[in-house]
Length: 160
Image (cartoon, rainbow, N blue to C red; front, top):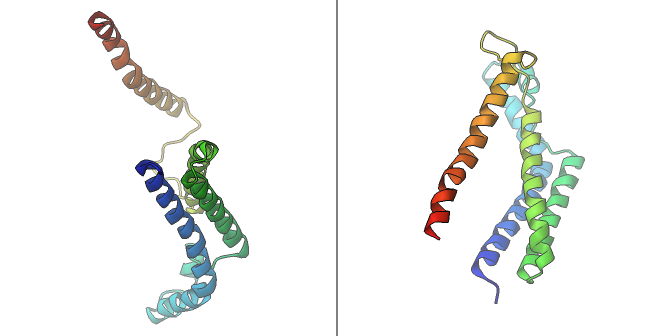
């Protein structure tokens, strides 16, 4: 019998796989109509028609995006079936594959954002101030991670 945690993780993988398959398929099928409806609504509100293109609003799905999304969905479904079958290799590959998928999705959403013009509140990344801030935050996070363990180690050693 499959453990509950493996079963629930596999069901989540199958749901995510279905999402990767259904959303691009719907975008490919209904995207042109949704684009037409958005353009006619913009025209009805007497807003320039170029505003959709200016903000990169496009409801259609390209053939490449559909192929990539369906491929990711099929990989997720295969991993879920391996996990349900009790294959240890499937669990290991899931631990490797899923974070990569989520990071790529985050990178894709960040890449789609329009550049923001430089203003007074923009932090320049080519100055020593930025390097110092990154180094400071890194040191603080590392300290918050390791100092509690260093402080509790003698206490744990004394109790054993």
